[in-house]
Length: 352
Image 1 (cartoon, rainbow, N blue to C red):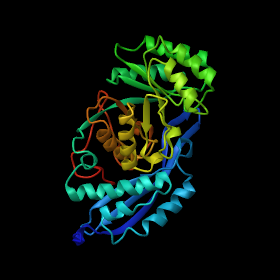
Image 2: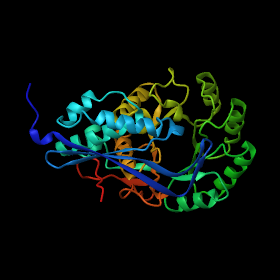
Image 3: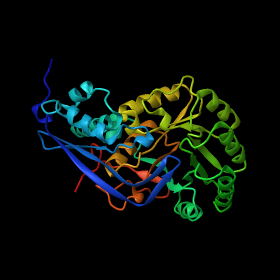
């Protein structure tokens, strides 16, 4: 067997903790977040190329606890020096999902740089240079109407809001007021984060029939496939699984029309890409979102989105960088609802 060039060997591993405050509280039916903490994974090879990954555990979204993530990172990384990225990727065990996703991203970043390819083209040769994105507006609160109008004015056509925070009737009335001020073609992407029982979810879905709803994520507190299938049959728009995909084993047959793919909850970019292929074969569409990671994690998700959706049919949830008061690097910054991806080999982001 031919040996790999010595200059592709990993020579150093660094694990850098970070704590990033948010500009304002991120609220959902699963609680409130005021900051994001995690570890930046940095791998350096013999040519001084650097591969980056972000481990920002968020148990509410389906990842492991931070303590377990830190332990797994230290344990898994011990075997990396002296290996090439392909060797390390082939031997990378399952592990806790956020930790595994960070290590995999750093290894793929190095591998793509060695190949001279943007990371998305390492995942899929036909991946485009830009993807559609939704506006991340946060909770359906008193300021949501103004935020929706501002986002629509900046060219976003898919506006995402967190629902399930107030009684169904109140939220439907608030959504109607928001919809009345939107330009033609603008739609609402809603995320209940498992807020409701089946009767409440059914009432909400029925009340959305007159509204420009693009999709509704995780309507049920207990996402039973039969109940989800009943709700999907009554909805004129896609219902989506998100948190309940943690572990990467969705129910078969799929009870909804959409899957939301988060690398940190699925164990990495390649497991997410494999799940997207399974979903497409079953006639189910996919979107990629962050788990409110740093810029490093957001760029990894953006590279994945291009590989998952080469035709750029869907709006992906990647525009979360504006929520951070400060970040590790420049975050994805869309213009008019589109995000342009770096042309540089690898992930395309560097840490100052």
